[in-house]
Amino acid sequence: KIPHSPEYIDWLKEKLKDGSTIGFDSKVVSIGLTRKFENFLEDKNILINTSKDLVGEIWQNRPALPDSKIFDFDIKFSGVSREKKIDNVKQRMKEEGVDYHLLTALDDIAWTFNIRANDVKYSPLAVSFALIGFDNTSLFIDKKKIPDKLKKILSDAGISLMSYKEISKALMKLGKGTRIYLSPGSTNTWLYRSIPSFCKIIEGISIPAKLKAIKNPVEIEHVKNTMVKDGVALTRFFFWLERTIGKQKITEISASKKLNDFRNQQDLYQGPSFATIAGYREHGAIVHYEPTPNTDIELNPEGIFLLDSGGQYLDGTTDTTRSISLGNPTLEEKRDFTLVLKGTIALSLIGFPLGTRGFQIEVLARKALWENGLNYGHGTGHGVGFFLNVHEGPQTIGTGASGNLETILEPGMILSDEPGIYREGKYGIRTENLLLIEKSRETEFGQFLKFKTLTLCYIDTKLVEKSLLLPEEKKWLNNYHIKVYDLISPYLTGEEKIWLKEKTREI
Image 1 (tube, rainbow, N blue to C red):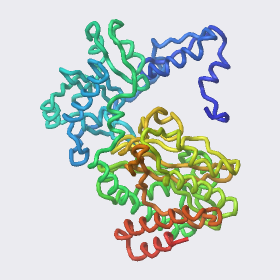
Image 2: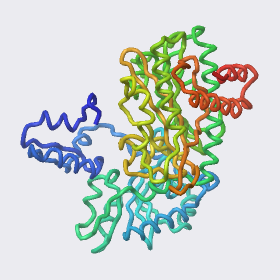
Image 3: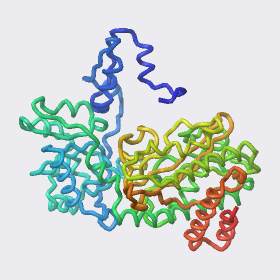
């Protein structure tokens, strides 16, 4: 927990009287969170009632469940067939000694069955459940959303299509002594309690979550290509912004829309991977700021603009943050920017032995800040899906907010590297790249790993205080900029190339 960020559960414990009752809908709260409530509030004799959907009872004109069409995610993108993925899940089930695996996280299901949809904003997912057994595999979904051709493809793969609402009945029918594996963090309380008491429940990180965290060679090659496309879009946006600001009105919202326009020109682009964080000046200090018509402000040729954005492409998911100066930066801004950049570079350069966990190396991203009495109140790195959720576990660097602290970093995982500094009322600075874990070398001390930087977007050297960078940090930045120019410039106009050449010149 971060001292200045109190959690709602602490607030409840402080405000509620002994013997009070908390109510929530068991269909929308995980069993893991329900237990947290029960354990944390037990000493005040606070009861938990999960039997009613109080909001639903008064919600007029409540929207129906999303009904976007499901589509087949081609193996040329996924790299592995759904049959092979299901077999791999069953093999892990055998190792765990379980009979069934209940899948409740939508990205786990989309990955396992090689399907995508648009039921969830920013993530290409379908509302569904799945139950995998050794003799049968069932997908619980609104069958009207599946085209006939895809229904046959799924049926031929040995997948039974069941009504979305039949999942609880299927669980209730499990036989005595059945061992079922599930993830308590994504399984709602209602479903958990639908499992007969004579069944044995085994809990852990879902098997598909572990498998999809490690990208296969086909996915990795696609992601590298996607980073070029996304880098082109970002470069064109920043070129446009620098040439246009002060000449016409640009706001946080209009800038976000313009960036989406540039991404939309790229092949296989499907939409943003999350709500763009476009924070100008003091708004940049709000870590997850999203401009609204009420908060939207105009950008001027001064101050710092923090832009955290990403795209969903059929061939990958991106997430990049850049902080740029729209005018003449102050000494404080340059110092803060450079200390953050040192953290980004330090994590990029580290080599580490197989078996390392993310929290063991996170200090590298914070070291330069800590040495100067500075810090940031969020994790340093989260996993990223492949045309799935932009925040994907269980891999993580720093905190368990978006992953599992015990997860070992392995080759094929993709994580973000995003230290930052936020000065309330002034500005926010964050530099975020995506990193791929690769094998490095093997010594008598075992296998060592390294990070490969995937993101391709220039870093604003106008904000760099060169005296604070070590020779190896300058070398990293110069080499990175050579790579950015070489891979991005072939897709730019002559004027854009000249501009990028200047932005990536050696320091």
